[in-house]
Amino acid sequence: MTIPIIDFSTLNGDKRSETMALLHEACQKWGFFMIENHDIDASLTEKVKKLVNEYYEKNLKDGFYKSELVKTLEKQEKTFDKDWEATFFIWHRPKSNIKEIPNISDELCNTMDEYIAQLILLAEKLSELMSENLGLEKTFIKKSFSSPNGIGPVMGTKVAKYPQCPNPKLVRGLREHTDAGGIILLLQDDKVGGLEFYKDGKWVEIPPSKNNAIFVNTGDQIEVLSNGLYKSVVHRVMPDKDGSRLSMASFYNPIGDAIIAPAPKLLYPSHYCYGDYLNLYGKTKFGEKGPRFEAIKNMGNGHAHTNNNIV
Image 1 (tube, helix red, strand yellow):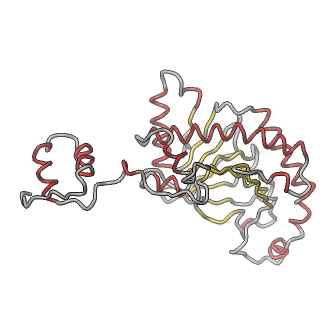
Image 2 (cartoon, one colour):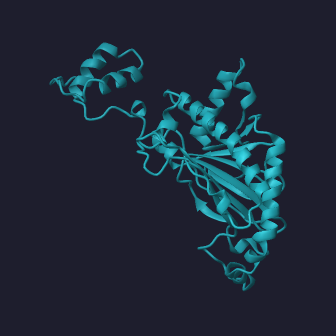
Image 3 (cartoon, one colour):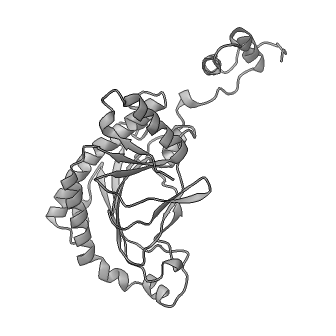
């Protein structure tokens, strides 16, 4: 099963409509895809991965392998309520907490900030393209993710290492779930896999990211805003017996007091009088139904109804 690949370099040329159609299909039928040629500096992504790996080795690895979870697996006991991961979370917007991460170096702080500044631009571009594909104003998702006073969206990164696991059959790297938020942009390991998405009754293995590719999936709030047109898909991480996997998942999410609802333009009409619909149908029977639905929505939910019972 070939994962959709969106080439951002084609968005400004004669292949734009083709690329937009591919993105729309990926959001509708897959809920995840890979982005290439996105203008995030490749040397920057390599540097931030290197520094995060070094941070894990110095600050997290020893503690992880001394944890109760590791002792459970040493007893050959299966665990259902814990994940085989070593993680920390960084908030970037609206306020950064990166300086509060224990033992984090200035170099990692500065490199992460530089990477996130470029990633936010990509997330905002994606939100605009998705909004456009849904037939909405391009700022719709961004505005929906903001508070009533205009603060937002938020951006945060879950930094995770899925350490080498002696018995991967006894534990999940990360249990099956969908993501609560909006647009998730993943910078991941280029050697060790383990991420899997559920599609059409099968688990699809996501390969390690090569050539500076960013993996993207859509969260629950995108499914809600799109009235179910775009999907939030179940996924998981499987641990590896031979290697340790890096994952940096950045979440472009609604702020806490954002009010979320499906875009009115994407809703079917409701609470209208059937007689009104029949009258309109009689005049537009051989036209497209979309404009007819939109007209019914604009009739004030069927206040001026008739008693026409024609089928």
